[in-house]
Image (cartoon, rainbow, N blue to C red; front, side):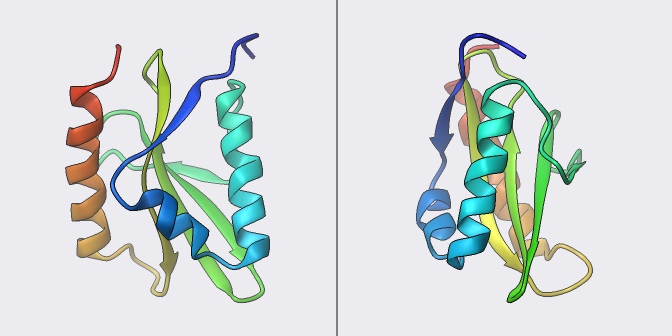
Length: 113
């Protein structure tokens, strides 16, 4: 755990997409992102190496469904939230993966290693 929290940068429409989550899912996402900011792992996550090195998927389950927040926290200056979406199938859709991959490319251009 670090003394200094990393800032959070939302790429593209990720913040608006997160705000569209139901209240309980939004609160849980905020809590888990706060854990990442302070150098800890979220409670439920998996690596998303198909998106890029260091990309992770934060998994949130609540009464109305499953929600995902894709982020990368490997950079010194910030956590980049790449994509937020409701999960409707077992497998993450190609469209969601492609969008997160494109935003990963945008994020690494301005990141400090």
